[in-house]
Image (cartoon, rainbow, N blue to C red; front, side, top):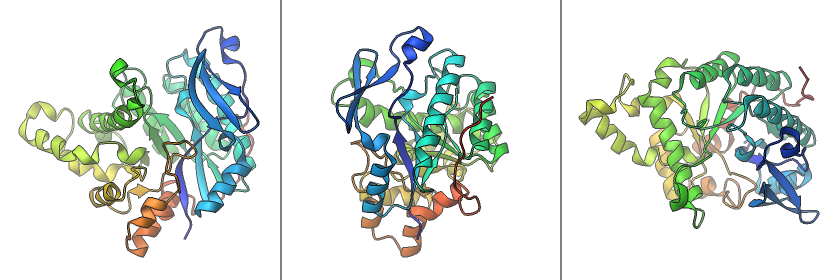
Length: 342
């Protein structure tokens, strides 16, 4: 059985001073506290403490060995997306962090699988950077769940997703830039309440806004954190769809009929929730995801899946088989190259 963690993040050990480069404030930068600890800063504000697991492949591999993980899919931390900046600045950021990700994964002995980021606010630029990433050996792309007020049913974002499908590039959707304002500033409520709600909102809009009906069925798209609160509130959406015609939007069928159009990861952290998720989505549509190496991630990767006593074949699907299919890793060799310029 090959165990694949679809959901992990990185920060480079260093990157250019973006505030100086672009002449605008509040870009992310890293304050090193010691060899193994740092603080990600947003201008003068502390954003998140991190450890060398974010940038040191040896640390990642040791943790993978501890947890019995064979392959780890690595993507940028969403604070690096720069969707709210000018598109040309976000494009440069994507190139900087994609290059850094390739360098990190090159030290992983073929066990670290990179998926890139793109300047999603500009569809043409995003498509070009996606193509560059794939040509360099990346296995897909991670995107945020919205760009400002544009959700995943927006025409430009649907065009990008269609391009992903045409290239056979799987898409991992991660919530970011959460709504809620000051009501969610305490106790990390933005992460525990707004983040799963963001993903639910994205899925509702893709269904009701007709995005899935406009997109080819061979698009491979997976949503983080078990799809947020979507599956747990699907009954409410389904009931509303049948009882109020204004709910149906541009969708052509009830919400529950779209469950075969997307996958979700397993990062729900509770066996009862995971069993329900697998029951709703089906065992072929849930993929191991840990959110490594952050404190809100699964402490022992795959532990919740293993604790659920699923049948052996189902456990194998969840721990790795589904991810191998999602990323087409059964037929494509690993070994990313250095990203080419241009």
